[in-house]
Image (cartoon, rainbow, N blue to C red; front, top):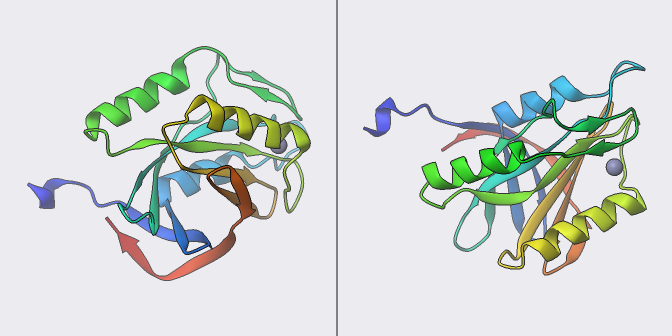
Length: 171
Ligand SMILES: [Zn+2]
């Protein structure tokens, strides 16, 4: 049966503290599509869903949600509204037999090389507090030119280093 399943492909990633975050092509494409390239492009945000190796050396960022009609969006703000993102997460968790779980969130910034605001840090803290069953989280900010990823292990947040994989990894 395995040959019938579509392989997922990973060409970019981020590293820090011995953890490799691998970004699936479809997730990377969603980020690219939502970059705030035009002056009227509103902020975008979604949740990140991943499976994690048992030794936590690799985090496979397999899926991400994209903005929903019910969300409240402006150029500089974003508020997830309603249960649409959560529903997708619940479905992925169920379909993967619990292997895929919430990893964190992504959102866009209208700046070339994005860095988190105080509100971002507070939001990330709140999300971790709401999910005490998890130890690792990642948060991503998609800027106009670059994408920044942050790793949080036991509530200690560090910026990850972007890497382009020489050989695309499949899983
Ligand atoms: Zn932000």
